[in-house]
Length: 189
Image 1 (tube, rainbow, N blue to C red):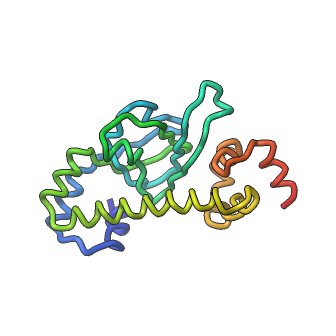
Image 2 (spheres, one colour):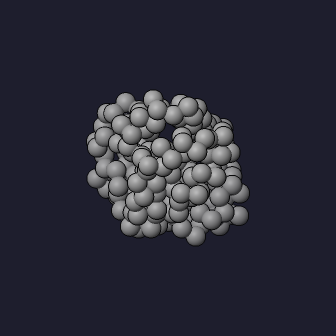
């Protein structure tokens, strides 16, 4: 619980009573490696904070080689199929733990209680949503403005640990190239 407390303390000062109420709503879950914990067309009922591990966001296809990886989340970040969570409608993508992943989760209804009951809930919710939006916006801008080679270099400058834990087929999909094109990029570097 200390990790999420440290993260939230960077955003705002939380009273002891608000903190106690908030953590009473959290559930720690351990997701085994390679487990899809939100399936296509399921309604996302949780927003979670990653204590440890790596999560992949992807659009599944009949041919696993054609899956589209469009996001990764890491330790000390929030993870959710956030559009499904907000609208309580079926998700158009899946969430998968790439490593054994420990998360602290809060349900949609419990988060609404936190918003209603605490002084800080709405601020935390808004700032968390803003951070998720900025990550999405940055990814879209990178896809539009950078070459595949530049996206690859930027990804590993920002997240060098990726090479150790994420298969190259997911990385190639994430930067928008085939596995063969990624292989050529890596050979040039």
